[in-house]
Image 1 (cartoon, rainbow, N blue to C red):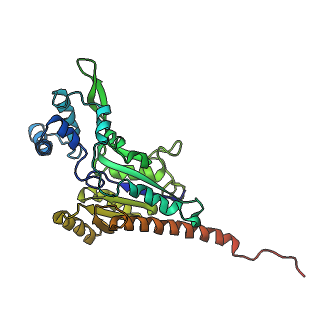
Image 2 (image 1 turned 90 degrees about the horizontal axis):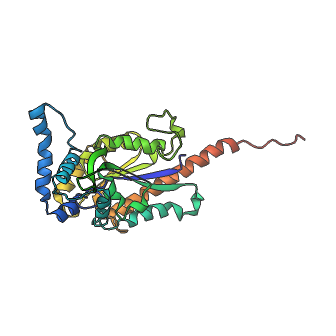
Image 3 (image 1 turned 90 degrees about the vertical axis):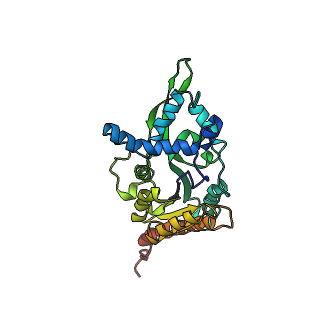
Length: 303
């Protein structure tokens, strides 16, 4: 099914300015800077004290559970996480850009509804928060970290175990799941051996958008397989701009722009143009396949 174009988004600092956990810290009066400093200190702490390696991308999940058990995050559960999603502040043009990229294809009669655009989110953040946000209705799939609930001493549900994790390296696994159609095609999982032409979304039809070096593994997979990569930085942030400019120089991304997806801004124009470019290529490739069988003259009666 080579007719699907996948626009794949990171979340924190790509769709929103900052981290999705901020509303939780605000509600519970927790100093976000101090929390993240504690989290960043855990990998060297556990390595020194116990000789144990931990994943720096996802160790924050343990800290969330510890804060909940110690009554700092009183009663935090998946329902509350989803409610926090409604309080996120998105960059300008979100979620309009999701629909606009779809309409770039849908409103063009040339494609006869044969080509479609789908959006996905792959994040090291919390799936429940994303599901509660205003972009949830625009995406075909969300990959993020998830908690299992347990009962506290009062019988109330709270987050108590880690259910699923995505880190900056396993984002590439999510890309292959999109590629193969995991969850869309019956019986297909990430390890299913499928020839390229049987995969649901071709890598050459993927666009990956993120904000920085932590997404280099995902950028690399997309670039290596012929897709498109795009980086964003906060408006007016010189340090962040230099970072993504260096990524462009290093061949990590094809293009970058300020994180403003309004219609007349570079990010919106580039994404819509890239979707149209991909759609035209899909259309031309399909016409070429058909032409191989129709270019010969039809047989006629001999005279």
